[in-house]
Length: 321
Image (tube, rainbow, N blue to C red; front, side, top):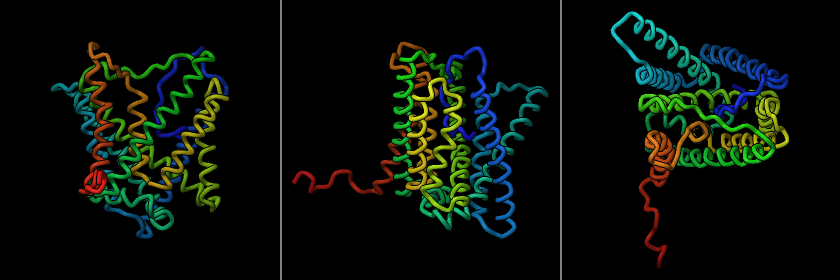
């Protein structure tokens, strides 16, 4: 979890995890526990004091639970049997757990962020209130989509140098090859993953801000903490460390400057583009499905651009006068 809300393609496995890779895994687990228990403590504290956007947290939890149920429907192969009831019970319990964790993270963060960094959740609050066509929401969706593409380019630029020094090939997930339902499942999974990753990501940034009481120092520590597991797990740290420092530096600036919506859109876009076996050869049978997922990112950016204009024309009459 600490290694970031991005899911990068799997590289061909080696003979076994090295000591540094095991250290990176321990590091991730430790910070995952810190996020879960730290957020739970803060959420209970805020709830008892009457702080926090309870309505927004409930809407977020309900939306995530419904997404989890739709995800179960499109992925499961159901039949009239008791085993299907068992799967349904498991899906409901998993959906409630994920929704509860996101509710907890939001309740833990929202009061502090509203008082210290209100600009980062303005568009998020408007989106939770149902204002899908708000120009500020559109602006953040557009910037986030562009940012996700930038992350992908930075990642693959670094990987190009890795290949030159003997790195193994990337192995993107092949779930999309299973059909339309699996493709839709990938899309929905990335939506939920983006929300969960962004809130946990922001929780660490806020926690560091409280501890060091300096915004830029907190951002620097934030970048180092998230880059460290990547450094430990890398086979070519001299190449990968600058790449991840750049990625997380851009992420820290984006979340402070634009807020949660922009980061969520960026994470969704990056995860889709990094983990999709897409091709421009439409003779391949999976080309249509993979391109449909890619086009969803373009639609997200297009919708953001359209709503950000707030009804204003793209070109004014004076442009060509």
